[in-house]
Length: 121
Image 1 (cartoon, rainbow, N blue to C red):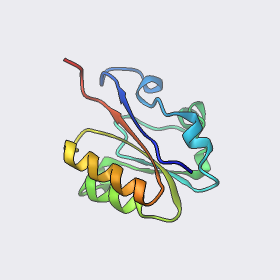
Image 2: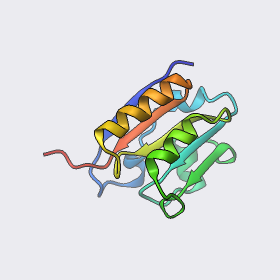
Image 3: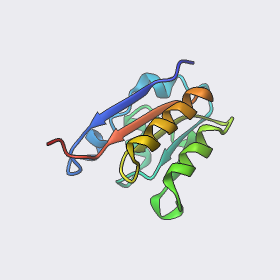
Image 4: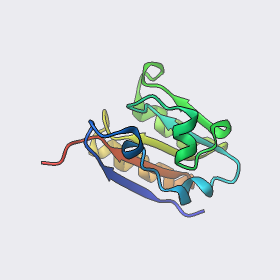
């Protein structure tokens, strides 16, 4: 499995289907392991997961309210042997933290999908 990092630029007012624009090839390569969706900015439903090629039975959704430190949560998830793909959004993360998360995910061979909620200028 090759590590990939995708930045998706979207306006925070877009519809769920636009905000969660995950590359289906990354998800399909998960080999039966968990897809961790960390701090999604919207409600994630089984239908929304299915629409993006994610099996609800293999999705682990960690809501913002359950996270004390998003950066550390991402690093721990990247190091988990049972998680093959992590989907998150770049809010609350600095550029340095995003760089460190990508490096950790590459080292642990975890797929990295970081989507952007930041508005383009």
